[in-house]
Image 1 (cartoon, rainbow, N blue to C red):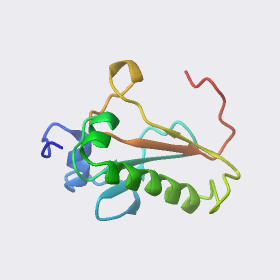
Image 2 (image 1 turned 120 degrees about the vertical axis):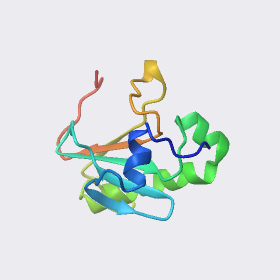
Image 3 (image 1 turned 180 degrees about the vertical axis):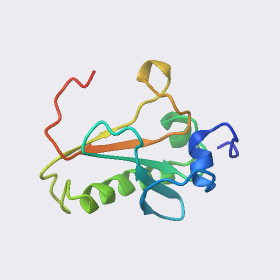
Image 4 (image 1 turned 45 degrees about the vertical axis):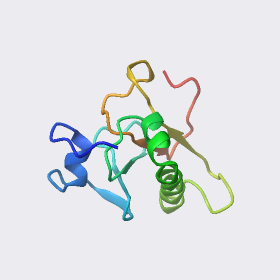
Length: 123
């Protein structure tokens, strides 16, 4: 883990410098609506600590990686995209990692997408 960075958008969100539309939060995670949604429901789930990629996070704190997944599931249930123990009606979880993976904000984040039928491949 590295410390918060003043040029990291999500570090600024976590620090309260930018006010997001918060959906869910825990001591170690924050979930908020994407400002440029790609589906009717598009929520970002981030760790409060700065980790640049999913690989960096899983190497440094596997427990926090598991918490992010649990937070994404909780968001999907809260948003009506899933019910406990069932994926119905359905949702997508996306993690972009590195330049070839399409990552544009270098603070690991999970995208929870749903609210309509999602096709494959996405892009």
